[in-house]
Amino acid sequence: MAPKAGRILNHIGRHNIRGDFFGGLTAAVIALPMALAFGVASGAGAAAGLWSAAIIGLVTALFGGTPALISEPTGPMTVVFTAVLASLTTRLDNPAEALAVAFTVVMLSGVFQILYGVFRLGRYITQMPYTVISGFMSGIGTILIVLQIGPLLGQAPPPGGVLGTLQNVPQLLQGIRPMESALALLTLAVLWFTPERVKRLIPSQLFALIVGTILSLVAFQGVELRRIGAISSSLPALTLPSLSPDVLQLVLINAALLGMLGSIDCLLTCLVSDSLTRTEHRSNKELVGQGVANIAAGLFGALPGSGATTATVVNIQAGGRTGLSGVLRAVILALLILAGSGLAAQIPLAVLAAIVFKVGIDIVDWGFLARVPRLSGKGALITYVVIALTVLVDLMVAVGVGIFIANIITIDKMSAMQTRGVRLVSTGDDAAELSDPERQLLTAGAGQVLLFQLNGSMIFGVAKAINREHNAIGDCRAVIFDLSEVVHLGLTAALAIENAVEEAVEAGRNVYVVGARGTTLRRLEQLKLYEQLPRDHIDLTRHQALSHAVEALAPAAQAVP
Image (spheres, rainbow, N blue to C red):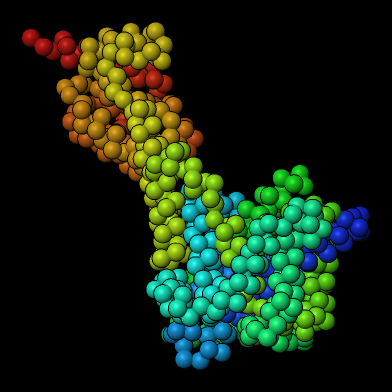
């Protein structure tokens, strides 16, 4: 395929048909149990999960920016959608209307993702502290685990999400259905203890799904088990956007969150794909493709989705290298849905609950959670706070608070480091970086000429140090503000310098500003700082400013009786 067409259609071509076929087939096999499980767990139904895997996988394979990426419903996206649907069901009287509005949230999340891509925010979205990402993902894994307590005990999830489930644990235990719980435990055992040689032949999730379903039909004959039930074998119906003014704020906030989460989840998976294929993804194009895919998913009543790490790795390991593997996977899935929906109706809900429970356990970042207290006390605080807020309060609040705390800590550290670059020098002995003539001039000033040196990045946290050093100025005749080593001058720090210059001028001191260049110079010009100083106090080098200041002391010395 021509390079231009490859850029548009995700490098789809005929040069890797065999590898893409086996990659797509393997990824389709893995997608089935996960899509079924997420569809049922979300409350939208198994069909919503299955068609999500097909629709999102097809659109991103065609229009994404990562050739080998596989997109489908994922644990984090399912958690957010489940919470949205539960909130809408509570606030709207009609369950059908609540579901339609929830799919509208999916569409709007796709719009947000497209905007992220259009405004080229791809490279910034994943620039979050790992403590926040780990805490957020571990919180989502915890939510998946908690929400499966009811289904694992043979009962429908109680209303109220995580808190509702935790509050109803005693009632759930009293109403346990032992046979369904036994089947769920057997499924978990298969997921955990399947030999590696079997996993090489068939994915553990699909193997557990098959084994659990067969056991339910053979070993649990005569036992009443809750099953998926009939799944429509027809193509999905179009779901038009639906929006109620009563829930407009809820819809917009959750759409933005869903879009942001999907973007983070996807771009992190893109990095995994890059490392395996030794290629480089196009993050902004990928976001646009993911956005279009989620719009399509919402229009056809399917779950939101994102890049799936497990499916992507399996696709690459099986030979998939271009978007053709994703297209073939989507076609295979669609055929399986249309032809095999009758078989899926016999799958027990307890088996699917076990699969989602295992997914939740895998999402939790156990290794980092165990190490972070030894690595950083503040990092541990951020991680655990984000987990608690994710599980008990709100996903958006968790991310916002986590980023805020992390930024405050980072700014505090950077400010402490940069504060060392702000100092007053009154004698040549205090400034080893000056040339010998400059040191001699400063010594000749006899404490009446001060050199106010600033070095490095002057972020807003340094403004306090600038004010502190300026306030420490005692009796002197001249102050030279040396900005020759400043690589970045933030607005707050620039205002602090302006204030120091103005006060020095008002005190009758000779003031010089030297060494500013590039963006630092432009910043000072925008503040009109130089308009407050004589021209011969500006267009000077540091050496010239020192010489000028020392020479200006002579008349004053002669005037003394």
